[in-house]
Length: 214
Image (cartoon, rainbow, N blue to C red; front, side, top):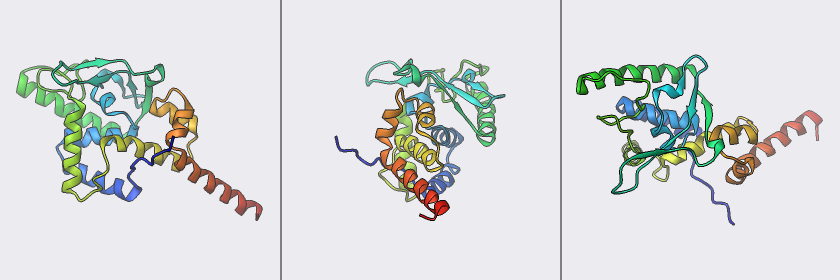
């Protein structure tokens, strides 16, 4: 079939988006930055519990996804494939942001519900303990784009594609990108991001050309 180019944010748009996120309430800032930094799927980010974070090694264990079908209760399920169950890595900055968010959540939960936040709690929880659902973030994202004059064709899922494209632009190999995104086959990654890899290959060839003078 014909490969369609997926909308991704270029580096300049990413900078603008991050600035826009920093004007939002912390919940949204953290959620969207996390998706951008890790390339997680929307439902995977909604399914994260505090116990999934290994602070010492700065990793997050992605192992469930939140599903909400209209008229039905929220439920979580395991990732589509075994490779969906994976560890992603986060920077010191992201760690700091998540720690601040955890304190905020603990305070909110205590104030609003008289409850102590536990390790089993979701990072993005509704009062009463249910996880927040992907559509909440989808709507909010559209609003953020509109209010900040950012490209309207972007979506929360575009942040995943943006993450992958930036990795590829840094010269990260297919297998590694596939592992980080939770694709079971590197061929899937190659298929989706062929144009990004083509660009990297061209740049590699040009570097080689400079070295060889050919």
